[in-house]
Length: 257
Ligand code: PTJ
Image (cartoon, rainbow, N blue to C red):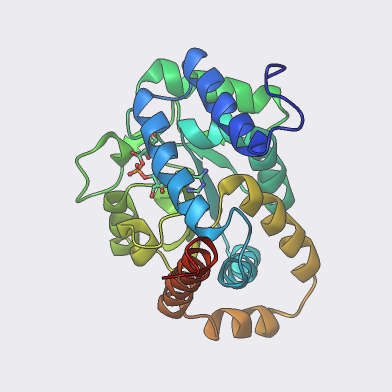
């Protein structure tokens, strides 16, 4: 990434792109993942490329839900494996929860590659390669292949950059779904119990920090955090934030109009 000038105004964004392109070259990211990233980037631009208050509220509720979970699982796809592999391993260790490779464009080779990289980074348990069954009814995509010891029996599933079909199917199976998705309008964002509308690269470190802060709190306190959380309200706040921001920018650029 040495070609990216240190003073480039969009350096962070270019570094993220480069990680995905490298992931694509290594066979971890699919071409469709590059397109998905473009959509995310656009929403990040509208949000202001920072973690906004509604996302912080969702992160707090997610931390509570993960600490209360009996069998939490962290789902990993090609994009997340390329963008935040170390953070995924840290999150997994922090919670004592397994990572599970779950791919929309599933091939055995890619699942193996992703699992190997996570293990090399110190992951203790990576599911979703040899241990999968066709475990999600109502789902015909390759995402239906889930681990018998992971997503199949999990009570809370953490997903990121997910497609709406699986989120809806996981909900039908009675699971609590925590999603990270920059698009507040996506089906995943609307179907999940808790949606963190933030870039995955910012969201996971903040989530780990929050888990550390809330660890040791009484169960009732964590349950109260969850009870007072309303995902619909949070998504509406994100949309209001974007609307306000666009109004402000438009006044700034075209003050005469
Ligand atoms: O690796 P695979 O085979 O499992 O495939 C992964 C992709 C991402 C191709 C697959 O899950 C897919 O097609 O996803 P979608 O349906 O395009 O949804 C991706 C969502 O993630 C979109 O709503 C994007 O706005 C959002 N997104 C993209 N980049 C980020 C993001 N959200 C958070 N952080 C990002 N960096």
